[in-house]
Amino acid sequence: MKKPVLSLKLCSLALSLLFVASCRSDREVVPQTEKTLQTDNVGKTLADSDRHTIALALAYSLQDPAMRVFMKTEALKKFDGDYDVLYKRVANTTVDGISFTQRLASGLSGSSSAGRVSATEAVSTINQIASQNPLLNFALAAGQEKWNPASETALVAVLPANYDEATT
Figure 1 (spheres, rainbow, N blue to C red):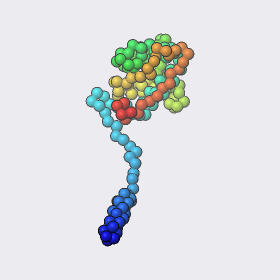
Figure 2 (cartoon, helix red, strand yellow):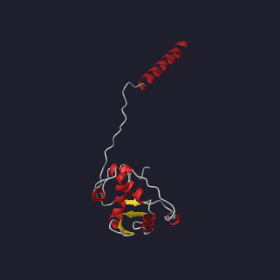
Figure 3 (cartoon, rainbow, N blue to C red):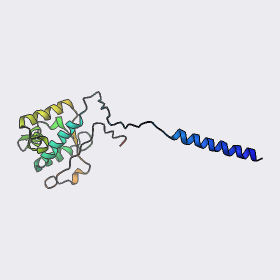
Figure 4 (cartoon, rainbow, N blue to C red):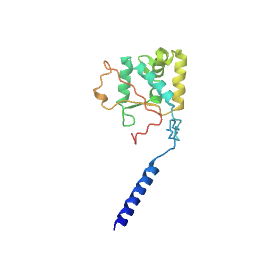
């Protein structure tokens, strides 16, 4: 009777050692640091550096209350059902006598973070980025009705190119 119990214990011990040995891994695990950006059939995906360039320009231009009022007015139109402003719809619209594109460009030419490029180079950069992405838009947070653009500056954030709204 002792032999079956001893056999059972030895089998259990052997199985336990086998289990522990199989869980141990000597393989080197290398994290994946680069993800491939995918484009859709509508247009090219903005590279993250282009997104940051546009965000920098917008943040700088939103220091002007007239630009903030303009953005709120356009966002409240809800052209797509959300508080979005489609760049190509407002690119040539004037805000206090200056086109929207020139106001964005002033963010690049006036910001030390952008390397203080000339006004002409800044407009060219904005136009190039916009032409590469015809769906470039600015999404404002919900609750815009309560925002007072005359006295409150909006924060600007950037979504990375691989952002997936369905999984985040």
